[in-house]
Amino acid sequence: MESAHAAREDGRRHRADGERSRQAILAAAAELATIEGLDGLSIARLAEHVGMSKSGVFAHFRSKEELQLATVDAAREIYDREVSEPALQAPEGLPRLEAALEAFLVHLERRVFPAGCFFLSAASELEVKHGPVRDHLRAHYAELLDGFAETVRQAQERGELDPEADTQQIVFELDSFLIGANIALFFFGDESATDRARAALRGTLERLKPAQPA
Amino acid sequence: MESAHAAREDGRRHRADGERSRQAILAAAAELATIEGLDGLSIARLAEHVGMSKSGVFAHFRSKEELQLATVDAAREIYDREVSEPALQAPEGLPRLEAALEAFLVHLERRVFPAGCFFLSAASELEVKHGPVRDHLRAHYAELLDGFAETVRQAQERGELDPEADTQQIVFELDSFLIGANIALFFFGDESATDRARAALRGTLERLKPAQPA
Image (cartoon, rainbow over all chains, first blue to last red; front, side, top):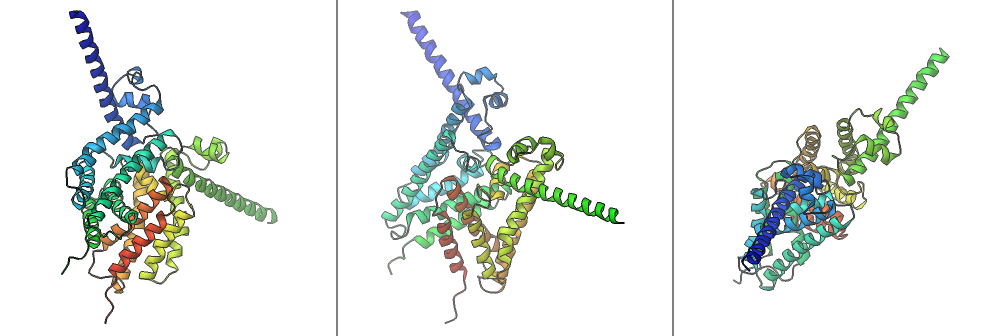
């Protein structure tokens, strides 16, 4: 019994180690993918980057495609932890929308991913490369945008933003400022980009607030 | 004399053929770069794409880097022909600014480059890849943005847009809508993206127009 218990413990520890190491490899993969591109992410290149043997990485991911798909999932977990979840702490409606926009800009400023938003980088890269990796990325990205649209809609339903305004048009405009900040900050190194985006976002939200009753 | 003349004519024709073929190769290179990335553009890959021998392409470009630099120049020529020059036909000031914004959106809709704006694709790709190709791309992109800022400034100086407004903030906001349209159209295949951008641009310009004297 003792040894069976010890063996089970040992097995659990091995699985936990394996899982930890898988997560560590994937975090490095997400980072590497924003710099060198998701399509360039191969088992050989990643093994070199994390200082492991190819067979060590291959034990976790059996193919380049499996690695790429898992990297997109890992990037989503990082994004949720850094952007989506902090925003959910704010009360539903306009405060949550403002918190989500701010959390996104802060994640750019903090270089959570070294080359800016993971999803935006990968989307630009895979724009016309059809295949399972692009589809998987697009599904995640669409989910993030749907969540964003839902947050805008809640603020409209509460009357904090004009309920008559076109939700998708609001999402397009707010999202454009986030994307614009990403490009200006990471391609041009323009450190004022996130504050320009803040001013633009504030102006847009102000205009959408219903006039106060006199 | 006759034969010397014929030889000169022949030489000219050869040079003209060479130049034409170089231009044709570069147009194909610019197209390929927006799909597969500028960094992936090698002499071997381009030769395969245009159906030439490697040595045939090599005769025009001695290295991958020379090819990439020439491709950025070729993309700029295409961009100027399709976007910058048509806008210059409009009178200076607000009409020219509106023409430039519209020409950009039309160049997306017409798929002048098959994966959207060449400069935006390449900028996203090369965000953190330092080197001469990135520097060259950044110089062209910065020149385009400077021209855009100058057009905004002219509209402000003529009083067609609020002269007190921060020119760089206006440029950031207008450019963000163009970038947002590019991502939505080419990554999500959202055909309404350019019209969303048109509505956003119109709203922004309307707000910047000084109030009409009563």
